[in-house]
Amino acid sequence: MSWLTDPFAAEFMQRALLGGILVALICAVVGVWVVLRGMAFLGEAMAHGMLPGVALATLLGVPVLAGAAVSAVAMSAGIGLIRRHGRLSHDTSIGILFVGMLALGVILISHSGSFATDATAILFGDVLAISWSDVGTLLLALGVTVAITVTFHRPFVALSFDERVARMLGLRPGLAQVMLIGLVTIAVVASYQAVGSLLVVGLLLAPAVAAGRWTRRIASTMLLAAAFGTFAVAAGLLLSWHTGTAAGASIAATSIAIAALSALVRGLSATALRPSSSSPSASSAPSPKVLRASS
Image (cartoon, rainbow, N blue to C red):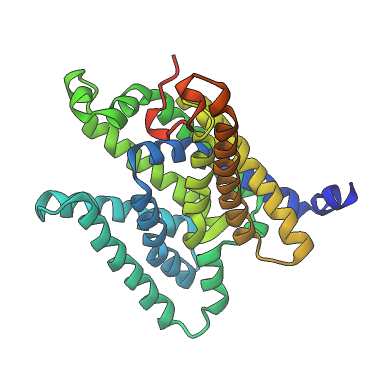
């Protein structure tokens, strides 16, 4: 078992494991809402929209997470402004800001002649460089994520299924949508250190999609997604250690593999049960769209 334990004897691997698990927990909570609301494009746009803030922070020598957060908040505000005053659809607003922020980030990167190494870390992350202060920041981000999720659980559930019903029940779907975007922003910024701006959506979506194959309840889906995400972090770090591959990419690839394997196993089990069971639920995998709120 030394191949399993020896890598984590190093302190930097312990920090990477702990920080990665915290990121997985944040992404598990937020990812379920992203899947339910069909907000994957927003998550992708947020991840790439961080690029100019991160690039500028690197050039100025300030904390990159601060630059990422400012950039993500600016993009969220920009999407809202374009949607309200430009009379454009939500997807069109996201698309315009997505391309604009990405282009600005590339311009800032290309302006520096010694940005190659930093650009690699920006795009693909550097989970092995997580410090104890980063772990503390991730703990704070997880606490804020859980607090928002618990506080706005009912509005989020209603908004996920029918915005009109949420409005009739007085659950303020507009505010709920803003808070959901805030959760996506927190998850994307928190995940930046681990998997970078290009791979963050894999960790945000794949564990939630994999978990949605096996449970119909929101709370249990989040817990299972957290378990899948935690396994992806540990397995990805081990894969990176023993094969010499990039840690962030290994984590993201492992999470995607888990989602694919979950779909395959669920499909095979449904096929095996179909002839011998008359229950409709045994013949098909539960869709994330039919998740029920936990009581």
